[in-house]
Length: 139
Image 1: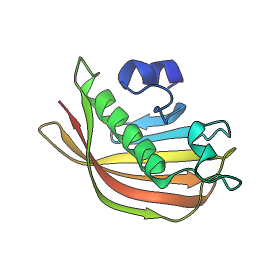
Image 2: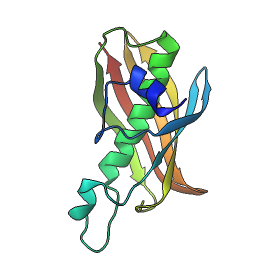
Image 3: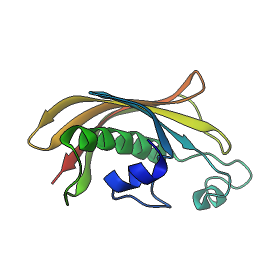
C-alpha cells in the first residue's frame, strides 16, 4: 500500500501522518514503515544536537498502523472518525534517530462495537524500539 492509498483510508495528514507505506497486509496483521527524516520540526527541540524521535510519536505510529488495519478490515472509513482512546501498556527499548526506518507491526487483539485493542511494535532493523498495546475507536 502506497502513501496515497493510506491517505484514502486515514484522516491523518502531514505533519501528523506517521506511515509512509505498508509492506504487508493480512486479515489481522499489518507491517508498515516510517522513514524518519532529519528535517521534521520536533527534532529542533527534542533534543538540540542530539535528535531523538519522541516516544509518544512512536506509539502514535503503532496506533495509526493498527487503526489502518481496522479500517481495511471493515472496508473503509465511510465518514467515521478515528480516535486514539488509550494506552494499556508501552515499553521503550531503543532510541530512534533521524535517517532510520521505523518498521511497524500491529495486530487487532480484540474488537467490540468499534473499539479496537491493538498490539504492536516498532523496530529499527532487527532491534526492538517500542512495544505497546493501544486502544482505538471508529465512531
